[in-house]
Each structure stands twice: as structure tokens, then as C-alpha cells.
Image (cartoon, rainbow, N blue to C red; front, side, top):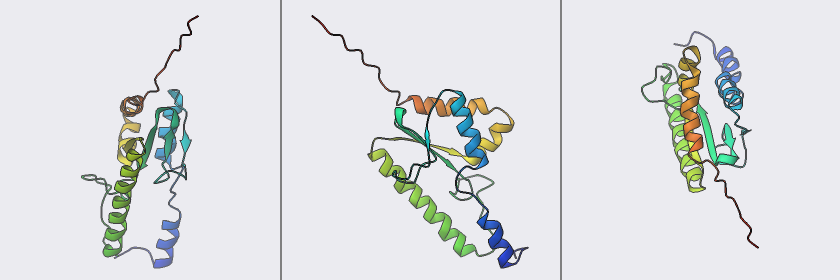
Length: 152
């Protein structure tokens, strides 16, 4: 049974943000500090990606463990009330994520997923290790530097 009435629960749920969340800001700040420049929440790409690095043709999704059903994560639980609704909601989120991943890779994008729990855990311990992993993924699509030599 829910500890709050329907109106209070609705009010709480309406305050959950979909962009500029704390984990997103932590990740973006760390990437910016490493010299990466990006765009956020690009609406014309499938899934409206959280972070887009056009220079590296790389997209980063920062998924909430609850909302996107992170397997084997303590934050990816099914609520005890209105269970059928939540199972349908979270399943459709996961299906949409999979379809967006396929669309983006078909368009030539390198897609990286970072989970909320990774930010929570490493932020307290060693965020640099997580950023190192993300940087390796980004640099897989490092732009090639082509030198053109003109001969007389």
C-alpha cells in the first residue's frame, strides 16, 4: 500500500525531471573538463539523446536505473502498488531504448549508455575511472586528421 494519497503521489512524480538531472550535470561537467564539447537533448535524433558529441559521432544516454530497468541493480525495482502499470511503463521504455539504439547505430552513431548507479557509486569513490571508460568509448570515433599536400 502506498504511504501517500493519490494527489500527493502525483505531485511527487510530477517533480521528477527528465533533463538536467544531478547525474547528468556531473557527467557533463566532467566531460567538459576533459575538453569535450557537446550538445544536450538534441530533439531531431531518435530518443532525444542526453549528450551528443557531433565531432566524434557519439551519443551518450544517461539512463535512470528505475525508469530504464537496469538489470541486477538495486534501484531497478518494481513498485508494490499499481504493479501492472509500472511493468508496462518500464517495459515500453526498454523497448523504445532498444529501437532508438538500433536507429542511431544505423545512422552511424556510436551509442554509449551510462547508468545512474554508475554515477552515484563512482561519484563518491572515483569518478575519473568512469569518465576514463566513457572517454575511451568516445574516442573510438575520433575524427581523422587528413593532411593535404599540394604539389607544384
